[in-house]
Image 1 (tube, rainbow, N blue to C red):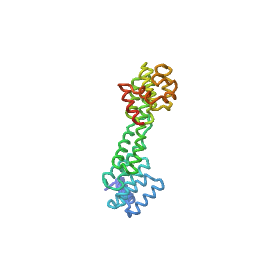
Image 2: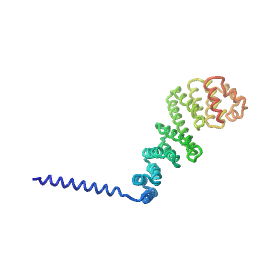
Image 3: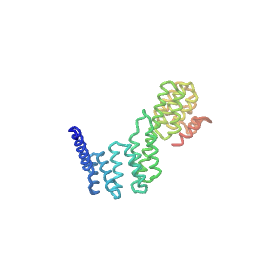
Image 4: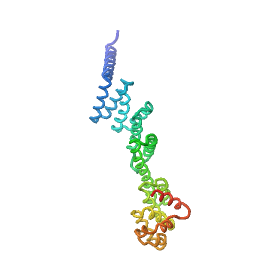
Amino acid sequence: MISTRLAWTILAAALLLAGCAHDDKDAYTEKPVETLYNEAMNDMLDGGYTKAAKAFDQVDQQHPYSVWATRAELMSAYALYQANKYDESIVACNRFIQLHPGHRDVAYAYYLKALDYYVQIADVARDQKMTKQAMDALQEVVRRFPDTKYGRDARLKLDLCVDHLAGKEMEIGRFYEQQGDYLAAINRFKRVIDNYQKTTHVPEALQRLAECYTALGLKDEAEKVTSVLGYNYPGSPWYERAYSLIRTDAPNEFAAATGGATKPDEAAAATPDAQKAAAAPSQGFFGRMFATVSSIF
């Protein structure tokens, strides 16, 4: 004969299974595709982005071959982006791209994927792996859809990414300079000049180079880089700082290098031929640097 305790155990298990079955039945309620899609959109408008993403997934699961299902896949990715669930949004975008490579909205899927990376870019004090991933994704948008609004916006965001990477190099260079590790700092500042010529960080990089060369006693190199800075950025405060540094250290030599000028504005007003002669050494790094920096103006 079955004991009372065993009987109760069997009854409890049966009730638990029945409850689970009832919950599953309530969780999956088949509805018309229009109803599911509209409910998901309402969740979006109410700011319930995570709930909306799940609702859009239901559209795809219950009506996988409908036109609404394709739209729902992309809307789910967008809802996840709005919910700050960027990794999940990237997965959803990749899925849409793989399933619908020729869809008219596939450009937006690529763009949304790039945004998922872009909004996660950390400040310059942190690792820039996400910045590089954002650049790769944005370049893919530009390459595939250059004449679309997504391609145009991606180009603008690419410029910001490049500026961000240059800012990271500058931060590291300034740290090395503060620590007295001038050779390491020089390498970082040169990298900004060589690799990020169109960014706003180039004038400061040139001025920091002048500081580092002066600290190492390399007066000629400091004068050369200051001449490059004055020729390309005559009105920059970074030029004024570099000029003051060089004038204090070697006033006669630098005056000759800037066509006899004694002030930053006078150096800027020197003839182009005199500026070019002072700014373009015959060989070495600064000869190459002058050619690359001046080419963007």
